Each structure stands twice: as structure tokens, then as C-alpha cells.
Image (tube, rainbow, N blue to C red; front, side, top):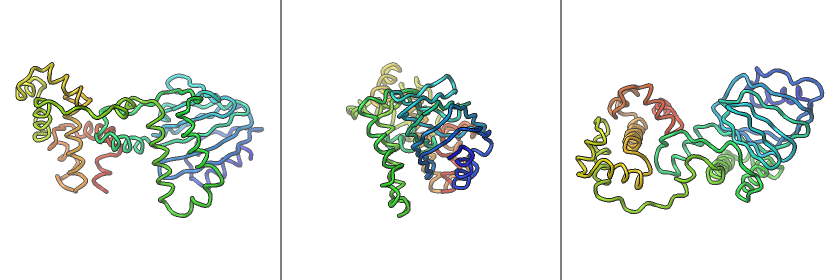
Amino acid sequence: MSSDEFAALFMRLYGNLYADMQPLGEGICIAGVYGRFDGLSVRRMRYKGDFTIRLPAPQDEITFVLPTAGKIIFDHRSQSIGTGQMGLAVDKLDIRSVRIGEGHAHYGLSICRSAVTQRLSTLLDRPLSTPIRFADQVELNKPAFKGVSALLSFATGTQFDPLINTGVLLPARLKEMLVDALLETWPHNYSQAMSRPEPAIAPRHVKRAMAYLREHPAQQLSGSELATLANVSLRALQDGFRRFAGVSIIEFQRQVRLEQAREVLARGEGGSVAQVALQHGFSNAGRFARYFQQAFGVTPAMVRRR
């Protein structure tokens, strides 16, 4: 169908997500399959024409593109070029424009950041100390990415049509499978943590320090003071946390505070969000909310409402 027909159909099905986008012009045709479900969109698309799309309203999603033909170019922090051999991961908050080359086709999916963050936090059994960052480019000829392509082929194929309307359970499971497949195969800054074997039992001084931080989440304690309590040098304690917890002392303390604050908010206790933040050692409610969303993919207010 023409680009105008595609835009009209898209708006009728999914609302005005891209209502501010400029018309693409004459001679541009778009074909394929596109679907959205609970913060996830999947697609199998083909394009006729060479054109540029400027996105006026950034979205807090991560887009993955697995080209099968032609070329696609994203202009964001730098320029990323996707071809039949090169897949792309792009933060949609950074995208300025997308150029579609003549005859381009691809499988793709976009996932809201919170879904990726929550799932990774669950797999690691701890909040994230820094936001997840996927590798900008990957070589699609590697076997690991065949599984992602197969899942997208299933999600956008005719065999999925009879199943999609049977309820929300199957789409939810498919979403989880896609997120897990990307976290396991697409390189990111937590890949090593996911593949790292379980650490050996932490030595007594590390366990003593961890226990103290859990029992006194709001106490302002320096690394040197904690090392004195654990009866070791600061260097030994720092090395112990890096080895057995995978994070620094400060990051571990923040994780403990965030986990305990989340439990309190989920139970509806502790007063306001600002009061819960203060009870767990965060004097700045805005900074607490930023750390919280970074760690769990949702805001403190959202957890309280649930």
C-alpha cells in the first residue's frame, strides 16, 4: 500500500503514536506485518522507495532491527547502518531520523525500556546499578541471532494469527521469550554478569559488611568506617565486594536501599514516596526516583499504586 494508506491504517489501529510525522511523498510503498502488545512492537516490513523519516516525538524504547535486504540508516548519537549482515540496536530517545534505502526489508522489534530493565533485574536477582546499554551493531551471520529471527518470524507469520486472539497469556509469553532471547544473545553491559557462574561463598568480613548494610539501610557510612566494622582494610573490603557481589560498596548499599524501599512501597507502608526515600537513606526524592526507575524500570509512584 502507499505510505499514506499505511499511515491511515496504522493510526486507526494504534492511535496517533506518529501523528506529527511529515508525509513521505509520492511513489513510496510499504508492505508487511506490524503488531503491538503491552510495550512491545514486532514487525516484518518491506519498502519501495528511498526516503527519510524524521521522528518528532522520542519514545523511551529500544529498537532492534535485523535487515534481510537493502539498507537502513539511523541518525542518533552517531550514524548506524544496517544491512543484510549487520543488525542494529538503537535507543529511540536518541533517534533524530531514519533513512530507508530502496528495496529495504527487515525484521524488527521495539521494547519499552522498563520491560527490559524489569526482566534483567529479575534474572540477575538484583536491581541494576547502571542503565542497560546494548551493542549498537551485531553481525547477523552468527548462530545466536538465528533464534531471535525465528521468534520474530513466528510473531509476524500467518501461523500466529489463530493464536493471537485466544487471550493475553500467549502474547505475554512471546514477549518474555523475545526479551530473554535479546538479553541472552545481543551483547550489552550486563552480558558478563548474566553468564558469570555463581560466586564462591563470600568470606566472613564481606558477609559481615553486607549484613550491616542490610540492617542499617539509612545510615550514612563511609567505606573506611565499614571496613573498620568488618575488621579489614578498605582495599580488602572493596576487592571482596567486587569479587563476590559484582558491584562496589556504594552500589551494593544503594541496591539494598532500593530493594527495601520497593518492598515498603509495594506493601503501601511508610507514608509518601518522599518519606520512604528518606527512611532508606535518600535525602533527595528526585534522585531516589531516578535511581529507582533505573533499577526496576518503573517509578516509585507506580509501585505504590499497584
